[in-house]
Length: 436
Image (cartoon, rainbow, N blue to C red; front, side, top):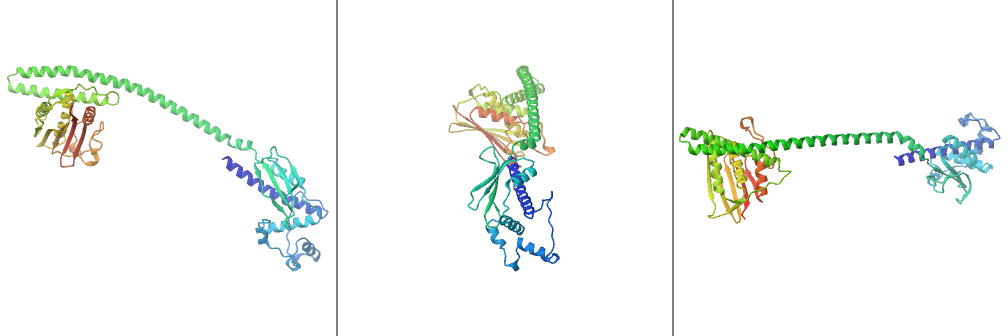
């Protein structure tokens, strides 16, 4: 902005200098005729045919015409930098005539015209050079030797006898005054933005504290639900073992499976919500992975007894293999994968759970012939609360935390979980755990 201001002021100085030179030349020409200059400059225009012989003779002396063999080459003068237009050439010729008559440039007059035109806005100095471009006269004074603006040498006349130059300081105060409102508005806007940001940060902080308290309360409440539910599972197991009536025993088994499913969901929710704040504490011990898979199969058969299905467990485990893991969490992972296979499929779905060891890696895969998952959705499957978009007839109750919890558990065991699926062709979910 300041550079733009300087450019504008420089153009102003150039224009006023040209006008001042023209006015000073006019005043000298009037004095050369022995007259007093008028307060305003006038230009009288008449054709040669309308002039008297005396007037034509006067014009010829001041500005020779081609018939007098005084022809001037304007293009050559442009190349030398003497003039720009033909009108400038006429003005320069008049400068030549005035110098020949002994009426040189009056710097004091020029300076006063410039000061009046600019309201003495610029600290400046006019410098007059001779034909060797050496200063021989000057008027005005600058505060420092380094001026903000120095013009090119302006020729006075076509013969290169004298040159004029102006040096000027461009004041900073007008620029500051012009920009003061913009600066004030910018400062006010900046203060307003800072205050808004501070307010929003305070509001966010308060909400964050409130949400943290709410989350802690909900987590505590959910955690407290596990103890009585575990007692219910134990009681139902005791009732089942002592019940002789087949119908009642079946009812107890279904209730026990439902309660275990609820406990599993509670644990999944706790693991998921604590993922970003606390590491999962694993209670590793040697587990029987085949037994855990059979427990899951038994519970799912009871839970989904109303839906035609089949669950097959294929064990390719070598004898005596030891798997060090947290049994409760690994059972939850298998349960999540088998339940998803049963939930997102049509009646008659076949689920196959395969257990195998490759090298020092345990691999568990759950294969189904259900609806399958399109490739576009597979990258987001293990994100919290994500559910694959499906049509209304295939919407199932869920919260999108089962697979996120499974991935978290497998990651904490140092393993990996992946999916291979195609829409309409079923899915294969598989996870690995390194053997210790």
